[in-house]
Image (cartoon, rainbow, N blue to C red; front, side, top):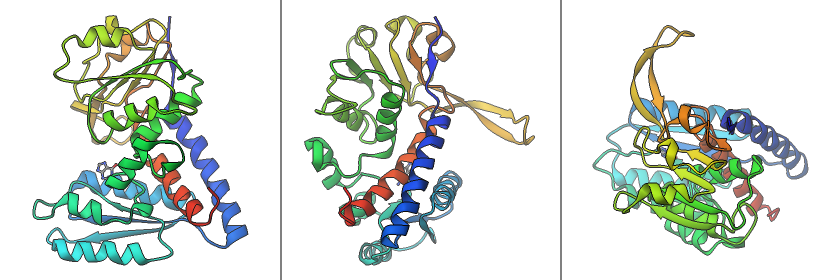
Length: 302
Ligand code: GUN
């Protein structure tokens, strides 16, 4: 059996087209477009490339976009003042502070300073609480779990009553996706287990999963014999396991591997996400959706 691939690259295109269309309609009717500011502190190369892609995507879907780059030695107080400025700016619906921040800045303090109604990353404790309550309380699910749920739904995988096993308990992926899948509502209503480094028999739990979501950060952690035949396998792992020269550009690029032994797993699973090209492209896509939602909340359209 060969699994159906759930391709994030294709789903991203569908969603970005839907967002572009909705932005056009809102602009015609209400004369406004969603505004997203990304705040980048310092010159971490990975952060620069993430932020550049976020801004490029925001531009593509018709948002007002601002890239606010700050020196690595900006003081915490100045950064907090900058966030306050964007909190008060009516044309801005989403504020994203790219992480990690330099060591002299308290990350928690900064994230907590963002207006929860503009926190399109979904990292503010108010939004974590809203997610826990579920239903209409939820404003901004964090982007990676939001993307995972969307992929499962768009692939047509039944979640109601399904056994979902989440490998990993991070605040950014494991805990929120588990919380989302257990809620009442479409794309959820699942029976959820979270497993982690202290779990006694990882394999036994994984073998029960109708939907297996792996966000452990360990290359090839999940073996093919841990997968229930026909299961939906979502691999969130992006592990750099070496370098190669790109055939396209001639430049050195990272060799990426997921947390699941893909080649073997695809012969057993019913659905599987590749790495790269699976969950990865969904994160920025859902950031765009959260920013659009933020404007729609403000206009009373949601
Ligand atoms: N750094 C790496 N991933 C992310 C993300 O999703 N949001 C923010 N703000 N910073 C990040």
